[in-house]
Image 1 (tube, one colour):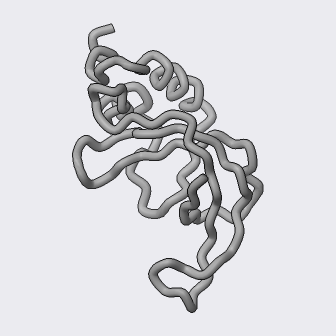
Image 2 (image 1 turned 135 degrees about the vertical axis):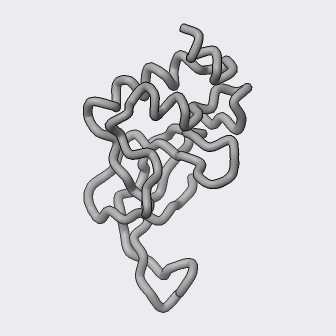
Length: 120
């Protein structure tokens, strides 16, 4: 069980969670899981005197590298060009029209190098 800051204060329990690595390469989706505790307020990690919204989640699958099936930004932007993948804050929602594509890419990439999906 882990916790993360969230910019959303609403019911998220049992929702799928996608973690994306930004900044350091390889950038892209590295994990999927589910929200186990709805958004709640607690002391901020940067400033304990300021309240921050958090969620708790459980990871179901994590892929640290392209060899393990991480979904790289190049693939995400190519397959779902209308989806924003570089959020300014945490908690970006995946658009409904992108959810199925994302799930299919994640499943198809399990235990395969990420770039093999470009060859299909």
